[in-house]
Every structure is written in structure tokens, then in C-alpha cells.
Image 1 (tube, rainbow, N blue to C red):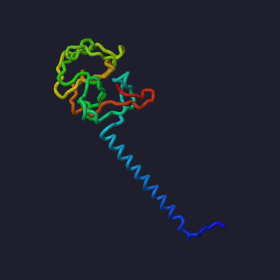
Image 2: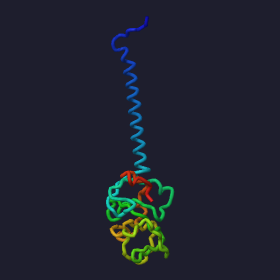
Image 3: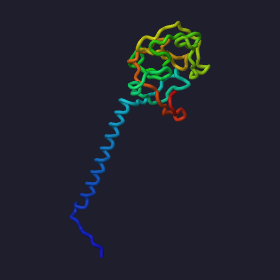
Length: 189
């Protein structure tokens, strides 16, 4: 004979209701922690951005989506070759993405599209032949706390050749990783 106890109506549902409420509380807690962690990561570490335009082709294409590292330059210096995101000097509401070509104190000149930094021609394997241009620029010395940036698609890029070296305070991130489209997935070099 099986023993069963009969509870008054509503008593057997109380433990079920309590368990449901506990599960709901745990779920809400986990969601809030996830939202807070996401906010902290996006605010202080990585931020998703979308490339608009073709000035960084072939490395980055129009509408590529990538993460930028907003924290890296607190621990390391900006280096020649880094792909950086910065507020456009002429309109800080806009953001640009370009490659760092020259650092503060460097002398830079461009002769028929060939870039010379501190008297040495730099290797720009990231600029395919079809993306080069023949513009020239007389020698300049990059001011303290400024960086000379250029797009990889030189023939169509609006960059430091047009608006001058970019102040360090305007640079807010380093391009880190393309996550969309899937065929472009990978580290930005």
C-alpha cells in the first residue's frame, strides 16, 4: 500500500511556487550580472565598430564589423603600423580608422607615393600595388603627442596628408579583431 498524504489546497503548490521564484531570481541575477559585465567590457575594454568606407582596403572593407581595444594604449605605446580609431580632427563627432605611419618626433616625406620615415623608405606590404598613389609631400617633423596616419587604400584615403597629424588625445582605440562578415574573421594586422 502506497502512502500518500493529501495536503490542503494550495499547500502543495507553495514549494513549487517557491522554487519557481528562486529560479526566476537566479535568472534575473545572472542577466543583470551579464549586462553589467557587457557594459564594463564595452565601456572600458572592447567596443564593436563598423567600418564605413573603403580607405582601409584590402585589410578592412566597407561595412566590416570589428572590435577595437580601448584599453591597450594605457599600457603600451602607439606603434608604427597600428591600425587606430580616432576622432576626426575637423569634426570630433566623427570617427576615422587609419594606420599609424609616423610617430612623434619622426621626420616624414612622401615622394611619388613612396613613404620615407627618418630618411628610410618604409616597407608597406599592406598597400597592394593597385591601391598606391603618386602623391608627394615635403618633409615634415611630427609634433610631440601627434601621429601621422594614412589609409591603406592610398588613392582614395582622406588622412594626415589632408588634415595633418592626429593628436594623441583624439586616438581612442586600436583595431583588434574583425568578427563580421565571417569570411573576414580574424586579427587586424
